[in-house]
Length: 278
Length: 270
Image (cartoon, rainbow over all chains, first blue to last red; front, side, top):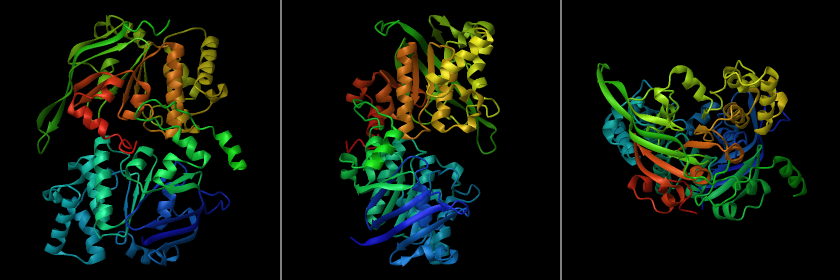
């Protein structure tokens, strides 16, 4: 299994508050053809971890640690060098398909942009490639001339996926890509991402707060709590035999399909004590 | 009062129809009629929870708004404790609203940022003129404490609270009037699972204590399974299936219900 990304000791802090850790000493590895889910509540640092891989952190934040992508430490690259990697070797899908597309450009144009920028495709070659991408994500190719507002939420997210895989990236980062969608649409999008990952042998980093989604799509799971990775393991290990008290507490909050489970909210005070003990 | 008297119907809707017209065509000169509610009938029993399930655009929020007379119906009737709400005059409808409250989806958008929490929660008491000023104040403090906040939170503004705490304020605001029916429109879908579990448990406890009847609108079928006894599945303004939650989950009859249930994430693995 070839290693695509290796993050070690990643720490994110505000520039003016260097002892406040938004992400603290995060270490993780991603391999080709595997989906790794980062799960956590809001504010746990899961999105910041993803953004720091791409060098997209806000200017008020700074990160330390190394991000080795295909053998190269990309944390040390300048913006110009990073631009060659973003969109080409690392693709990204965001949560809101409504706001992340430009409303005044056709979706075909927007999918084509990165192909022109990174691969220099033009004219009929570009058109063919855009149409084949649309087909791969299940949108009729005539839709290349449509504007984002003419598409449904699910279709827009499919367009976003087409854009992110356009240059056949080795790593795809998906930040809550299905949270804004209806459940039946969510199921379709998850299936599509899983198929693409297998077909293109991509490493996928999938950020979510939904354990149901984790159960559907993950190979490996990383649990984050207040900026720290508290548990890492295969899906089976983490979902069935969680080790960390926080993972156990979080799983106890998830309503089950059978409706038999007694929901138990997290007792943060207790968690703090037990963490000291552990 | 107990829940044992299951047959008592508190809210009944018969053959509700609501049509929106939408501009269509290239320049918007055309008119298309969209049926948001197409012959919808539901029955809510006292002390129980009825879930309305459906995807975006299925008409579930329109149903909630029409039931509470926040939007006029084209036809059909809503009976609350046997009274037809549409036939009441403005004054008696306002009096009746004390018994019909709503908890909204977005705890960030549904609280007035310029009002203190105490004013938000107490506003209903003021409008319905319930008790003396001191009694109203005490009521607000009690209610805040009951939903897990502190009495001195009454002096703070909504932005000083997290999403889960704001949803607690929204619940306190709805329940301070001791309503009979509470419509919860996706009350937990904007919240983290850990906070979601807290709010669901709180809603259940309050239902038992105050003998509330909930109309619970949700797109999350895992949450519905947990909180509701009866459910209605809506699709494109129509009810496609309704009945007991356990029965529907175990043996869905309609293809659309089956599709919805099979789309629950994590079900395959479970």
